Amino acid sequence: MPLLLFVALEAVTIAALVVAVRRVSRRSELVSRVRFSLCAAALLVGVLLLEPRLAHPGRDSVTTAAAAVLVLVALHVVLQVVDHLVWKRLLEPRHVSVPRLLFDVFNFLVLAGVGAALLKSLYSVNLTGFLVTSTVLSAILGLSLQDVLASLMAGIALQIEGSVSPREWVRVGDKEGEVVQTSWRTITLKAREGHHVVLPNAKVAREELVNYSRPGPLERLRATVGVAYAHPPGEVKAALERAALGAEGVSPSPPPEAIVTAFGESAVEYDLRFFTLDFARAHQVRDAVLTRVWYALRRAGMEIPFPRREVAVHHVSDAQAAERAEALRRDSFDVLRSVRTFHPLTDEQVRSLARTARLERYTAGEALVRQGDEGRSLFVVRSGQVRVERTDADGARRELAKLGPSSFFGETSLLTGEPRSASVVALTELEVVVVEKDAFGAVILSDPRLVRDLSLELERRAQEEARLSAEPGRAAATSVEDSGSFLTRIQRFFGIEG
Image 1 (cartoon, rainbow, N blue to C red):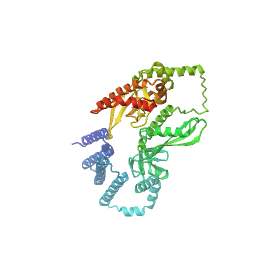
Image 2 (image 1 turned 180 degrees about the vertical axis):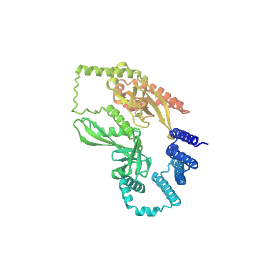
Image 3 (image 1 turned 135 degrees about the vertical axis):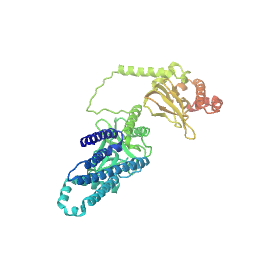
Image 4 (image 1 turned 90 degrees about the vertical axis):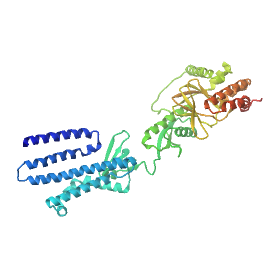
């Protein structure tokens, strides 16, 4: 084959290989790591094939050098393949944590050893004498590579101490993230925003290192809340702690704790402290807590005031205030009038309940009532949806029903004071009208004849709940027992003589 044609074919082959390797490397991490070595190997093979066709005095030296470099390149490819198989296929699936530095040092030592052996066997180079006598070269290398060497030594120290491991959450200076990889020169963090932050080991050794994953995954978070001076700190702290305890991601043990930290310009400042086992979602957990806090304080009538330097003047006349109160009473009347349990009541009696009823707001996931808790109130859904669920003796949780606008629950507790028979959880943003025992007691005491009609309504409601629970034999038992017992229980609860 003519020399020119051979060179052209070799050039086309190498170019095609380069294009193919670049395309494959986009989909394969292993090919991406060795693509340069593969292209270099193809070039060296071409040199070895071309050399016999050339006649020049240094042909043997070029062939020897190309062969030696080809051996090192091939060895590098083999080491990378072994590295990939051990790291990706063996260790990572089993969640075995091995410092990346060990792999890098092993690969370097193997390549350095084989390279030294090739130099000694092919060129009779004594590396020991060269390293001992080349003090000037050593000084130059030390000065030029001092940052690299500092990172190398810091990396070795970090690996020996075991300060960090992959999948742990750490903070280095002002950088925070999950440890993705540790190597001989750097530590790679995955920030909350999703990008990688590469920190030299020398910087890690100089900065303050905080490991959030040690000694265990339990980590305390904090949130600052300001509440108006008019509300007693004891009541505020209890409301904050209850709200945090029900938020998603908050650990029940240790329980949340709220403390007063300062008397601010316009509010008493509280530091709400709570623990989580999922530090990776710390922002989402804090968001859930503050969301629950807003709803809890709103329901309790506790104000989160604006700073006094932001003055907002709202003038509401007595007539406007009365108009708003009347609109709320009318709305509450319409909601309560639709409750079947209240059908025996006259419109005037329902209006009496509407005057004392209150409107409460809940967010999705909040529990309005819990099974087994004491209760003296009835809830009517004004807007939104709730789920009624019951926990069996074996701990299994079963959904009984989903209730929407105009639905109600809690009438048994309102009329008899019995513990809640089921839990009710908000599925969406929710508004409910709440009627308390004291308000209802005033209506019953003014007209004791209502007791019998109300007991019949409770009996009917109990039979419906028994059918929903789908427990064999329960409906019949309820019907027999409740027909004569609801009347007595209502009279006893409200202190009415039979």
